[in-house]
Image 1 (cartoon, rainbow, N blue to C red):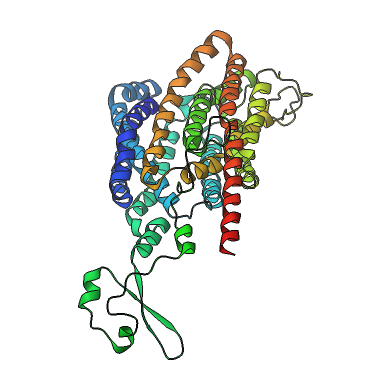
Image 2: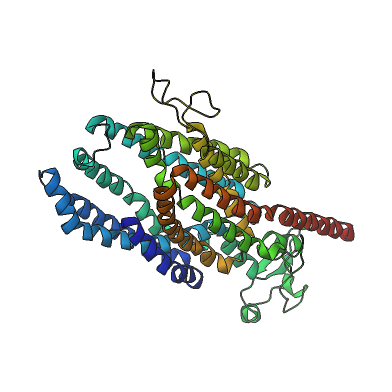
Length: 463
């Protein structure tokens, strides 16, 4: 219910938030997000603290949560939805503006690796928490400890919220280079040793009012702004300056890359929402794992994503290849049974050979599915104009909403047909999404090949 409220609010605010990121300065949107985020954190801490203020029995505690302060949690996460709709598109767009076109894949990969490394802390703290308060699925015995975990996690997120206030659009690479190239440079005079000196002129009025020196008279009384060099104009070209309406593969061309990326992610995220939320329950129900054992799985998973993200940054073809392998892993999970002799099984209970789970399959499904996210983000930012990046980034809010809604469909399938049938249906949906994403490979390769040919022909003409 809480995540549903956040998803609905984020979906409603996604499009207006993306429009605001492109209409106004992005650092202004981030400053508003900073203030809103601190307010959300304060409201969340108060809500979490008031849930269990005092020593209550289990029944009274659950009744109090249901009737009292749970409404405050709903309100807090509603504001978190607005925060995500504003902060996410603005920060991602500003990050893309700060990196030259064609060089975004590696910095975005590093950011993705750091974020997944930080995600190890959550499952690690949960493992310690369950070992202290009881390694069982009984909520009543651990609500008190869980309350402090939620409060602590909210508090440590406040410093990054404050840092959002100190971003500056003018320091972004694309904004800075455009500002520099917009100022015309005129030749002022030639020094005795042959050194050329230039004067930066803001307008023709300043040129006419400036006193003419003896050396400048030799070059003309009213010099015209010099033309920007070809090298400079190419280095600060718009990300879509080389994108035309021509098709590079069948009826698709570079102009279709953002749409294909969005539709592929939309299909795959809807399939993922049907299963990801139920993995902990699946392991607890079918294999009898304890909470700490399930958290071990989620502790290792981000580390695998970090390693795979580094290797997939090498070639663009891995964007599709990794997701194909992830689909095969999920499909295998739909058919494997808890036998220790099967490929991909991992024993979590030491000394108990009868309990085995498709641990490696799940890790590889998540790892290969998410390791190519930096490459897809880099492609999207390279093929979207700067003034539209906020709106394209805001579409993630729509995807997150349908992601939460597909969990309802997944719950229905699990209740009627079981977990493995739901895994199989999700794998089929993955196949559709991967097929859409597979169109990107020939489109982008053909586009880059044509750009290289144009660059070679330009060099020949200059020679």
